[in-house]
Length: 164
Image (cartoon, rainbow, N blue to C red; front, side):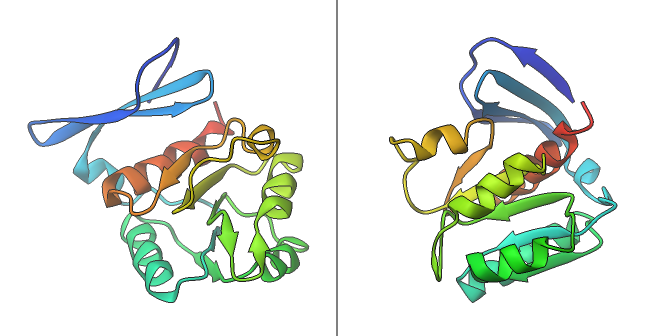
C-alpha cells in the first residue's frame, strides 16, 4: 500500500492479473497495487461490524468479507443494535449503511470517530451536503451497488489506516 498526497480521481485500472485501486479519502489518496490473490486470507484480529438493514445485501457483503479472510463478521440491522453491541466490543472496522431500519447512522459514525474505529459508509443515498459531511470526513463513502473487489479493498485499506 502506498499513501500519496495530492489530488487523484478515485477509480480502478485493471491490468494483467492484478489491478491498481485508487481510493480517495479527503486529503489522502491510497494507491493499492494488488493481485486478486492478495485479497485472500487477510484476517483482521477483531470482528468486522456490518450495519445493513437489507438482509440480502448483508448476506452478500458478509460472504465477500469472509471470503477475503476476515475471521468474524457481525451483521446488525439498526442503529440501536449497533450502539448496544459497541458498548462492549471494539471492531477492526465498521461498515455502515447511512440509513438503517431505525434512522440515520449518525450516532454510529460519531462513536466510530470518537473511538478512532475505522469506518466505511456503504449507501444508496448521495453523500450529504450539510453538517453531516463534517462527521464523515475521512471516511470512505461507497455508493450502492459497489463493485465487490472495490468494496473488499476499501474495507481492508480503511481497517489498515489506523496502523499507518
